[in-house]
Amino acid sequence: MQKSIHREERVLCLHFDRDLEIEKMVKMLPACRWSQTMKCWYLPNTTPNFRLVLEKLRLVAYVDFSEVVKKTEAIQKERTPSPTSARKATPMAQLSEPVQQEVEKFSKWLKSKRYSTNTIKTYTEAVKTFVRFFKDKTIAQINNEDLVAFNNDYILANHYSSSFQNQVVNAVKLFFKVVDNRLIDVDLIQRPRRDHPLPSVFSKEEVKQLLDVLPNIKHKAMLSLIYACGLRRNELLHLKLTSIDSKRKLVLITHAKGNKDRIAPLSDKILALLRAYYQAYKPKEWLFEGQAGGQYDERSLASVMRQAVTKAGIKKPATLHWLRHSFATHLLEAGTDLRYIQELLGHKSSKTTEIYTHVSTKNIGLMDIY
Image 1 (tube, rainbow, N blue to C red):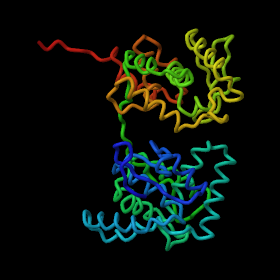
Image 2: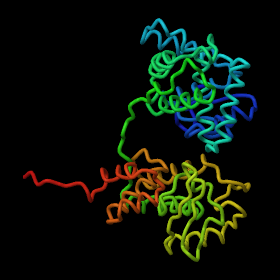
Image 3: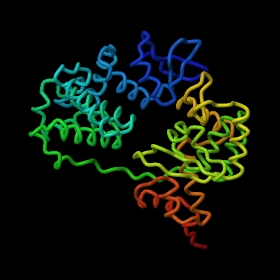
Image 4: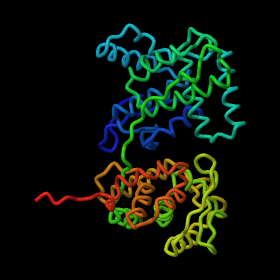
C-alpha cells in the first residue's frame, strides 16, 4: 500500500503480484478502481479507507503488511495505552489446520442451508477474524468472556462500526452452534445496540436531474429501473431477460434478500426505455451485461452513479441505495398505502418500512410560530 497523487487527488495505491484471491477482495472495496497509467488498483486516501484496506487485506495471511501494522499499532498505543494492545496484531496469524477445517465445515454448512453468497462470504471472513484473534487457543477453549474481550480489545479499540460488530456477533453465534463448543453459551451472546439512521432521500427534482444527465441509454435504463421499482443493487444485476414480463408490465425479482421472490409493476415509460435499450445493446442472458458479456460489474454500476451525481451538480454523498429510499418515500408522499410499499420493497417486517414515515414531507407537520 502506497500513498500517491492521481488526477489531482490523494489516493492509496495497492500494488501486488497477480493473485485471484487478493484481486477479488480488492474489487469489493468501495470506490476502488484500476489505473492503466499507474498499473495498480487505487482508492481515495482517507482514514476510513486506510483502515478498511488494512482490515480486508490482512485477512489474506500471505500478504505482508507487517511494517504497516507495526506503525499503525504504534500510533494506536501512543493514543490509547492498553495492556492488551499487543493482542491487536493477532488477526495476522495463520489459521491452524484444525481451525481451518472447522471454518470450512461452517462455510459448507452455510451453503447447505442455502445462505446467499454474500452472507457466506461475510460470515466466513468474520469468523476467521475472530478465531485469528485467539491464536493461542483452540476453538474448544474459547468461551463467552473471550467474545467480550474481542469486542473491547479489537472492535472497539480499532473503532469499527456497530454494524461490523453486529455482523461478527451474528457469525460467531451461528458458528458455535455448528461446531458445538460447550464453553460457549450462545444464548448469552448479546448483539450490540444498533444505530438507527434515517434513510437518505433525493427530491423528485434531483432524481430527474440525475437521470437527465445520463447520455448512455444503458446507464439511464439501469438507474431508472432501480428508482422505478425500488430495487437493490444486486437485484438489478441479477435480472435476466426473462425477468421482464412486458405483456403484464411486471418485473420478476427472484432470489432477493432472504431468498424471497417478488414482483414490481413497470410503467409504460420504463418499458419504452427498456425496449430502446434492448434494441441498442441486444443482451444475451442478463438484462444488463458488461462490455465483454456476462453479468454487469457492481463496481461499474457504482461508478455510473457517482458520475451521474457529479454531472447533475448534486452536492450530497449519494449512493445507489438512495434511489431505493427515494422510491419508497415518494410513493408514501403520493398517498400509497404503507403495506403495499412494504410488498414492493420486499421487507419482511412493516417496522422496516415505517422508517420512511420519518422522512416523508407528507408526515412532517409545520407549526406557524410567528
